[in-house]
Length: 51
Image (tube, rainbow, N blue to C red; front, side, top):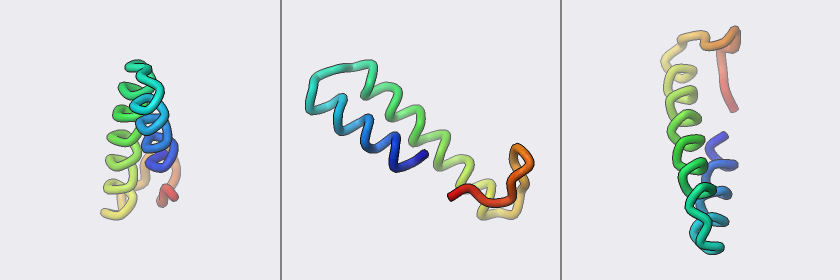
């Protein structure tokens, strides 16, 4: 999710499409939160690790 968010942010920035930039930021934040919870050992959504 983090990589997809970064790609959307780059495409949104280069193409000047604000909605892609916004979606990219949101996806990166969600990916970081899930990664952090997985790293701390909390099972989120039935999964122990998010890659």
